[in-house]
Image (cartoon, rainbow, N blue to C red; front, top):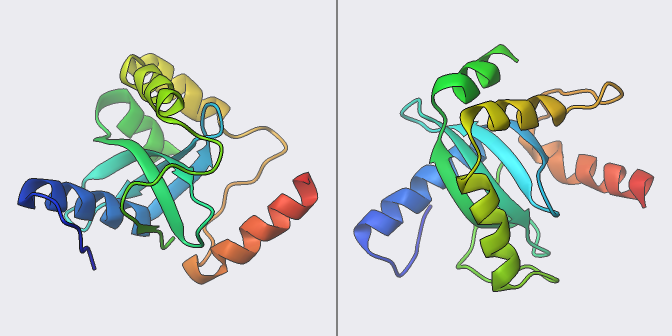
Length: 147
């Protein structure tokens, strides 16, 4: 359910992003601590969502989201439940960092997006679908191993 004090258009955009985040096909590390989620909306659109995990369980701060098309969509096709909150910057982030990451992704060409997506999985990594209810436990295990 989406409840925000926003214009109707902003409300619809947030709900579309939420749909994509609830149906993630890929979720991986991005630049400077951000993450990239590729998901599909209920209407079948594919979105690339750039976000920063929020310390509050099951929530994120969305930096930007846009529809996949062209080469990035083709690369994704070849190849959780997340709740959005009112914008509040994650710990350790400020507005300039958000703007820097946003500018980098907005300036990215289709070829650069495909290359970054392909680099996102190291040869020692495994990509798999995990039931949404197990995602928090999997993230905890990964954090323990990396920490």
